[in-house]
Amino acid sequence: MIVPMAHILAFSAALFIMGLSCVLARRNLIMILIGVEIMLNAVGLTLVGASALWHSVDGQIFVIFLMAMTSAEVAISLAMVVYLSRRRGTITANDFDGMKG
Image 1 (cartoon, rainbow, N blue to C red):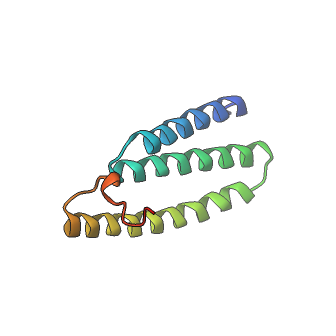
Image 2 (image 1 turned 120 degrees about the vertical axis):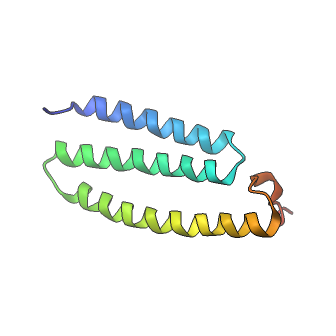
């Protein structure tokens, strides 16, 4: 069963918009990280779909690299969130305005 490319693009666009709205609407740092991950997965889905359409493995290789980078990013980000939570007692993004001019 082959999924049409238009369906893949529509689904990945919907995922990207949901992730972007999560990043823009939420103030909790963990929810912002989840939104970023949803956006990255939408991009990965598009790359895999395009790779299948053009019968090339370049997109799939790039998605594997993207998944490795994403796992490292999540590990570092969650460590920072735990550190900030222990240090300041909150994970609300508005409370971290120390570099605001």
